[in-house]
Length: 122
Length: 288
Image (tube, rainbow over all chains, first blue to last red):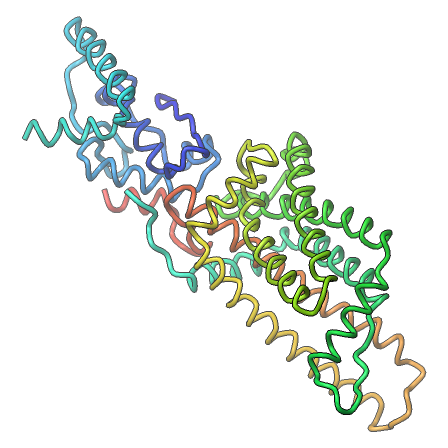
């Protein structure tokens, strides 16, 4: 499964938000490659021992943020179909990872960064 | 991003429908109902009925009977009741784990193996719960005002720890961690929990009253209106415990499913839906 989610119940952050953050981070760092299918609702719900509706809500929010897209009969995929990663991509991945780390140190979540970048790039 | 709104009535409907359809949960409900009966039997042994005397208010009459009942309760009774509290908390955690599985669209079990590693947390949580309850019971013995204050504190204490049960069933929290999480969750969902408790309570009391009326009419019919106590009366009284136990078991399950659903909504940010609702995967695909 390309998404690794570690749930923290003590954070006080809703679980759907934690799933949203994890998928957004996996998309940003290239853990989920363009064209790669995201886990199904049931598979992810079963793995995380949570309600399937929670995954539906996280995917819905990710879709609203323009990060993923559901394709009828095929599954859920990253929103932008990019070319296979090259050296430039791996360099960019390192930079983005560094940026995320620094943002986290300042208490800014990966999802917030993603939404900010999307707004700014319009 | 916040918790999606969900009406308390929808959660109560979900609880009743799930409790009715998933009979596998009834095993745990039956065990809990029997434990409640045992606790009631222990304390009912010493119950003193109020003596009605002229010139005395009903408050004074009831208070005196209550104080005499408390004084008659022995230390052994309290010790046994503490052990039963431990058993009750364990059974509640088991039932809630099963309810959480059902709400996730899975089968209820296996419960015993999944709770094997949780015994220490359950023990600590039960000890904290029982200590608070005993302390408030002591307050009740002080005076008539103390009885009222003790009752209010004891009720608030039990209410504040309700959501610790799903925490123990789901999260890897310690016993004290579960107490802290329960307080955190009840701050978010106290209104829904209170409304749910009230709605399920009203339904439960209504059904109890209807059942009591039906059984009283059945007794009148069998006794053919005679004022003499018939020889089969003790057997009749023993037999009518069964339907009350079934009603009690059903509402225990419904109440715990409500807690599990409320906990899911407060923790995950999305509430579970009725078992007859469409498959979440299909809903997601259909809208894409």
